[in-house]
Amino acid sequence: MAENYDVIVIGSGPGGYIAAIRAAQLGLKTAVVEREHLAGICSNWGCIPTKALLRSAEVLHYAQHPASYGIKIEGAVTPDLKAIVARSRGIAERMNGGVGFLMKKNKVDVIWGEAKLTKPGEIVVGKSTKPAVQPQAPLPKNTKGEGTYTAKHIIIATGARPRALPGIEPDGKLIWTYFEAMKPEEMPKSLLVMGSGAIGIEFASFYRTMGVDVTVVEVMPNVMPVEDAEISNIAKKQFEKQGMKIHLEAKVTKVEKGANSITAHVEMKDGKIEKITADRMISAVGVQGNIENLGLETLGIKTDRGCIVIDGYGKTNVAGVYAIGDVAGPPMLAHKAEHEAVICVEKIASLPNVHPMDKLKIPGCTYCHPQVASVGLTEAKAKAEGREIRVGRFPFVANGKAIALGEDQGLVKTIFDKKTGELLGAHMVGAEVTELIQGFVVAMNLETTEEDLMHTIFPHPTISETMKESVLDAYGRALNA
Ligand SMILES: Cc1cc2nc3c(=O)[nH]c(=O)nc-3n(C[C@H](O)[C@H](O)[C@H](O)COP(=O)(O)OP(=O)(O)OC[C@H]3O[C@@H](n4cnc5c(N)ncnc54)[C@H](O)[C@@H]3O)c2cc1C
Image 1 (cartoon, rainbow, N blue to C red):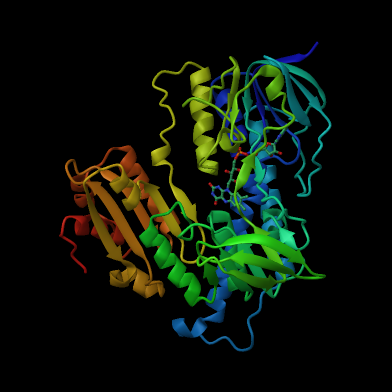
Image 2: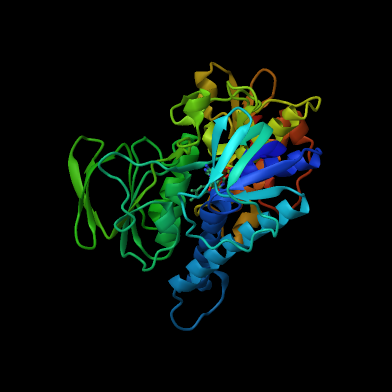
């Protein structure tokens, strides 16, 4: 007889493993099915290994500019690519081992293999069609295998994979996705990055710091197109100062492959075609949900533009089946997946006061140099909504800590509703802003007004003081600029 659970989660990324832990905490008998690597894309091929690479880039950057800090380093400082990649891959393995430990600790059964829904309340787990490339740390001892399993509630958390443009499909050799870009065997001399969203720009930043000649082609009018245009422009100027070439409102229309290089035909803003040759190209044009071979059609589960359609609590149109994380649509971010997981499971357990997902309060961070972070409405979106707003700005160049750190390029921009003083959005570019943004996320979540923020004491000297000054500036009261 099939083993029965209260909750089965398909996929063990940040959506899946967090859903499993929360379900177990609430006393539900829970299993998580995984076909490739515990901890999903985030820890194995996404958030964490990229940050490991970017940390190596940061160390290299400082080591190559010691004189700015009064330090002498004799001889050349050069990156050791093999060691940089090995460090990043080692960290990925440590992360997937950590999720194995958490499953065991929380008494969540791990089922190893590929799951498919066969009817409501039932899945069949078969052999994985996607063998792992990243080493998996030893799995918990009682890990189960192929077979039929049943559960009252099935949560789909199968994540996403790189999207490909027709005719410009990644081949893993000359045209890379994030998988190949994460573990290069040799450093290319030149690189074309197609797409300047968070993934594209983080790789562009990493490779540029490593000394690679990087060109970015973006179809939209700004780099990191979801960000506030003013912040994007500041970041773009910094990238260009570092030697990156950036083409906006430009489109790769065709790629010719040579023996060890590509030539991209790029349609520029003025309609002219420019040929750009590079050793390698990264296709970073977004991701698409893993909705195939899951039995969605058999059960009649609705999808839209490659993702499963859900309500604010993760419910699909079929009773007892839920979806969370990347497979349930944008923004495709790990913290969105985790939060959706908790909401979904708490609703399943009928906890009181479960709030549906509020997508406006999901922060976004890009770990390029300089970093970019934001939450809420951009200035353009607030205006498009017809809101009357007050905008505050405070530059890093007027912040003592930023100057002391040698990181005086940046800006904090805040947007308030003119009538109510409600904080509608915050946008930042500069050092450490990915750590700072959370202050504004908490503020927005508590429906804070300008007054609460002005009465908050920020420690000195910190870069966080730029946050308070930006608020003061929105009301004509900035003190240090
Ligand atoms: C290069 C890169 C950098 C990123 N950086 C960040 C960042 O800095 N911050 C951030 O918030 N987000 C980042 N992301 C996005 C983040 O990785 C995803 O949003 C997050 O992993 C989504 O979590 P998930 O649980 O929905 O899916 P995933 O993490 O994709 O996990 C899904 C899991 O399901 C498994 N699976 C799929 N189908 C089946 C099946 N049929 N049976 C069993 N198992 C199955 C897969 O093997 C996988 O392990 C980045 C992504 C990339 C690619």
